[in-house]
Image 1 (cartoon, helix red, strand yellow):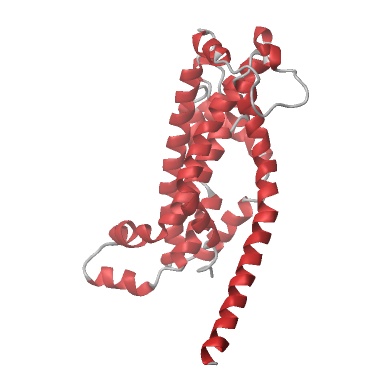
Image 2: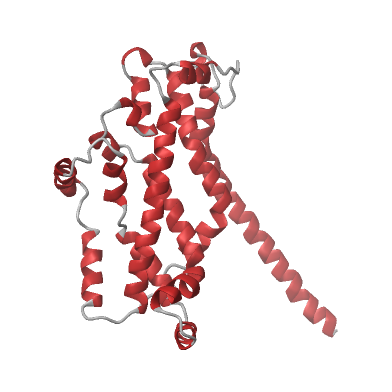
Length: 290
């Protein structure tokens, strides 16, 4: 009798979990299909000849697969796609590294140190998030012009090196670290920077990965600011360079889709590798906030 009494609740729990799993899949699977449909269409058109670009209905698999679009892009000397890709990698990687360094240092100061005006300064930083980007475009452009940094990597990297959102995200995680760990390291003779680097920073690794991926994606996909500060064709980033595919003699849908497919691959690869850390970093963002 005792075994029956124990087994029945377990069976009901398995049934409840099974029903919950089925409902979750029933809700999320259609959403995933809708989200992936545009990418599947881009991939199909990127490998389709120009004659099939206007076929209806929409194809998610090419009728006549070909690499002509990619051959055209990489063989055309007026379309330095490899250089654009390299520029995007350099800019996105540099911006991400600077954001992680500066945001983690600032977040550690706001989360672990006590100094006059700490909360007031942090409040001002949060208020700055409400300033529209359009209000800062002209001052930033004029400053870069006076510094003679236009049409260089510096014009793209440095304006995005400070991230208030990143500071807020990491600050919440630094708050969650027990102070005993920090105090023990200080008693053992560690300085402030060593405590930050060897004790606290490894404990917020998930948040750092999430922030790094979001920063990289934002920099990689950025179109407006590079379009404003860059003019030399070989110095363009990939999103700006792809605009050329829709101008002049390059009005060919196959080339545009091929370029878009190339541009979408790095973000997809990064997310597929670090998706667990991204989810963990975001879901635990507010657990230690004060």
